[in-house]
Length: 124
Image (cartoon, rainbow, N blue to C red; front, side):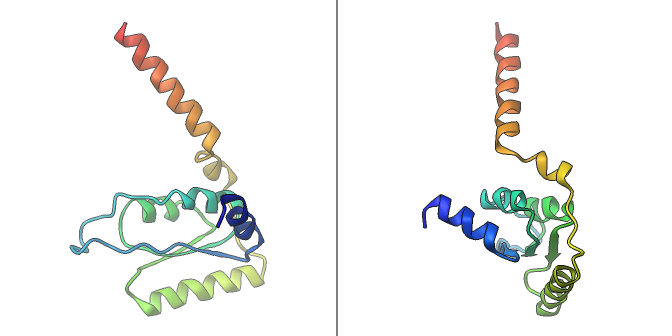
């Protein structure tokens, strides 16, 4: 699906789902955040996230719009889904726009450019 249609679908959804599996050694944190998660956050939609320990889980636990659960526990996933649906129905989905704004592509690019400028200035 073209990116613009995917973004349109995200914005028209009531909620979004991100799933991540663990390494074979499930005690090893997963050091990976899928790029689509940042687009999910930007929509302001609630996100159901059955994910293992790791960077994605750490990020989403800071976002009040994310309903994080373990990825292998059906009861935990069902509880997160129920909380999310109840919050949607009762208009209680919370957002932290300031936290979400930290992950804006333009801001991230500006910060990276500043870093390159500092590093190249020090190298001279």
